[in-house]
Amino acid sequence: MISLFDTHAHLTDKAFNDDLEKTVSGAQDSGVARILNVCDDVNNPGRFKELLEKYSFIYGAAGIHPHELENADLKKVPPMLELKKVVALGEIGLDYHYLRAGHEENEKKRQQEFFRAQLKMSKDAGLPVIIHCREAWDDTLKIVAEGNIGRGVFHCFSGGENELNKCLELGFYISFAGPITYPKAADLRKIVEITPLDRMLIETDCPYLAPQQHRGKRNEPAFIKHTAEKVAEIRKISLEEVSQITFRNACRIFNLVVKYIP
Ligand SMILES: [Zn+2]
Image (cartoon, rainbow, N blue to C red; front, top):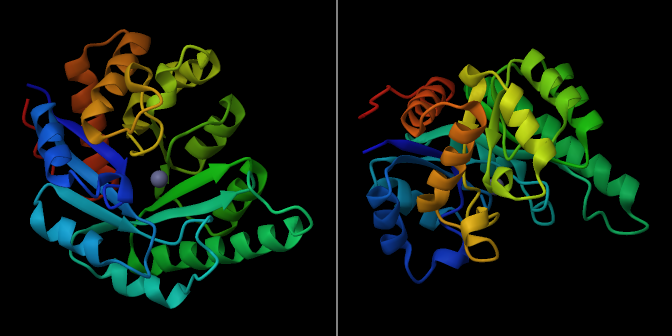
C-alpha cells in the first residue's frame, strides 16, 4: 500500500455536496493518506471548518482566490490562518485569463493589491503560500520576489522551463496536477522531467482537471494516483518512490510531522 498526499483539493466545492463521505473514504482506499483542502470562500468557511474537524488527515489552506475578489474582504483571512489545522495561505495569485473587456487594467491592479496584501499576511503568520498563476507569470514572479517570500508552492504548474527556474530560485515547490497525463502535454512532461525531486509535489485540484483516465468527469482525490504514476513513468522511478518523495516534501513545506506509512 502506498501513501499519497493530495496537496490541493476543493472538497467543499458544491460538486461534492452529495457524496463527500464516500469521496473521502474512496480516497483512503486508493492510498491517499493526507489531503490539503483549499478554502477559497473565506466569507463562508463553515463546511471547511467542519471538514477539518471531522477528518484528522485533512489539513487546510485559506485565502482569497483571484476569481473571488468581488465581495472579498481581506479582514476575513487572518482569523482563518489561526485555525489549528490551517497550514498554508492560499490559494492566492494572479489570473489574467478572464479579465473583463474594458476593465483589464483595473482588474489586474485589484488582483495585484489582494495578492500583495495576502503575501504579507503569510509572512506575518509564518505560513507558506499556495500560488495560483494563469497567464500572469511576469507580474506574479515580480510580486513574489518583491515581497521576499521564500516559502510556498506554485500549484498546478503550467509554466515553461524559464518560469520553472525562476520559481526554484525563489525557493518554491512545484506542484503537478492531472494535466501532466494529457496526451498533448508533452511540454509539461518535459518540466516534470527536469524539476528537482526534492521540490516536487502532486495534487488533484479536484473537482477540476481530472487526469486522462477520468477526463471530462469530476475529479477527486482518489485519482491522484494517475498523476503519481505519470511522474513515476517520466522520472523512471517506482510509484512507491514518487509517493514517498512527494509525501515527505509536502510534510516539509507545510510543517507537518512526517508519518509516511509505506
Ligand atoms: Zn485550486
